[in-house]
Length: 345
Ligand SMILES: Nc1ncnc2c1ncn2[C@@H]1O[C@H](COP(=O)(O)OP(=O)(O)O)[C@@H](O)[C@H]1O
Ligand SMILES: [Mg+2]
Image (cartoon, rainbow, N blue to C red):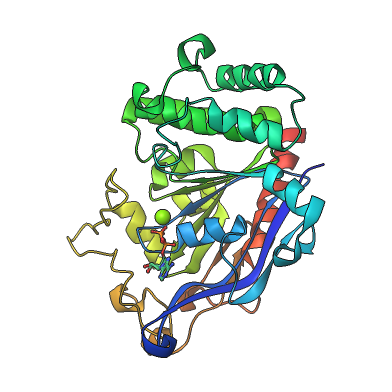
């Protein structure tokens, strides 16, 4: 059974201050899906503060939607309980940016792998669990005999990140949500880990959301790229369309900009202006309008919906206005279908 998570028109608003008077929209009207009959890789690209981790947490059920809904296999996520909730917790796995945070320094590294296998009933004995752990370690290029029995500090950052991937794999999920999985490993390991994620999709049919601030790696692994800014989908489409024929002025700016390998550092436009100030966004209109060279009055007053501009892409820019609106999930579906058609030829 392949699980599907679907977000429909989700807003996430954080409030702070006395009486919750300070409101911050971390996500606005986001629709996308992951998993299902044609498991694919969708990259969510955006700078620091654009809402990527909020989106990951939403799909994991750690963050509730202020409005809109999130469904797992058609059931509202916040209503999952009992065996459905257990299935969800096993079927949907996460890989986070900092593998060190995920480890308890007092336990040997196999502990966080063995325990869930036992909890979810995937292994009847500790020996059986260890055997599955060894298999998962080999899949991610770790030698079990050199890994099992070590403490987290005895392994490199890259090895720890591989263990986190092995952990999610051991549970045989149908969906993996990877939030900046390679931003803390060095460049030589980055491509190895990305290739591994790509193979998990191709060989094991695992659907992936690959969250990154790096358009280059997004293009390398994903068939669909979703560009997020100020919590809104600016553009979404087949990777080829978005990278080679970008429509949205923000996507164009990103492609012209040189991204920094450090996710906490904002990108810079070619002219030196910072496009990463996602902390003081306008209340209405397009979030990118204050920095957009093409912005006009309407952009500052009215938020553009996702316009159905091309068969395999949509853009939320008034310059791309068409009669039809669409959603991220619909574009993902079309991109996955197009890929399946090419594969069948
Ligand atoms: N728990 C929270 N409370 C208040 N604001 C938050 C919280 N989590 C995230 N935010 C805000 O929401 C926006 C999006 O954050 P985040 O999803 O972490 O972005 P990213 O992962 O793209 O860097 C940011 O402005 C951030 O400050
Ligand atoms: Mg983040």
